[in-house]
Length: 326
Image 1 (cartoon, rainbow, N blue to C red):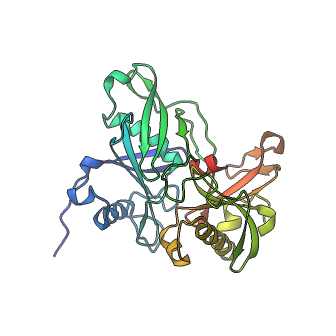
Image 2 (cartoon, rainbow, N blue to C red):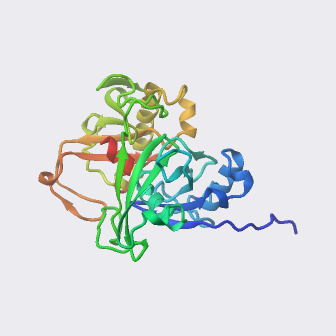
């Protein structure tokens, strides 16, 4: 009976924020996967367990959600004054592609911790007890992120009492600084915070009609619309959207229209291979609501309600990069 030879690749399975993924050192990957291309994508797909027509990731490290079908590649930085280069791949669950078009803000916390675990940080810069500032070059979008990682007895501290909505158990807190997330650099999608040059645009969305939208490139390209304009309150939980095929189709049509206007794609068909960006979010004035974790949120404690889509589904919490845009 024929079989593919087994290979062993060192990897670390880590949570960062409301996401988790499989982290690799670039030098540990097979030579053919150390460069961008089909070989790398196929390897990461197999690690995650994609494409999976059952959408379960039973035979892989993925968790069958946009928050858990992720891979990260870390390497010594090619940029001055940075410690590591961080490359993020969003692995599609049921189709055969890896989206390299954006960053994962939640896993940016994991990138800082992994850099320390992997021995990429000069020991002279790591305190015995305290905070280590890990200087990260986000290679997908050409931006700098600084992760402030707690250290106890010379090691990354993972336990703690920091509670994060969208995560069940408390842990240590890692604070991120997104340096110039919307400057005039060379990031994909135009660089400027408002890539169309307007604070508000009118999109003509097939099947929806004319719709006012704000398109921002900060943290991650994001298309914002008023929840009321598309029939929502801004306090919807996952079942209200993810169990409604018409709702998913409507929100995807808005995303595609925004991607075209932002210049991220040239044809609607290209959106099928670019599901990670842009995000689409619908927002509303603050109101009381019950969170996905069954926590009562009061209008007086927040500035607005915002719900955001990730890889075609409503996110159970909030993406870190979309939080920057919000």
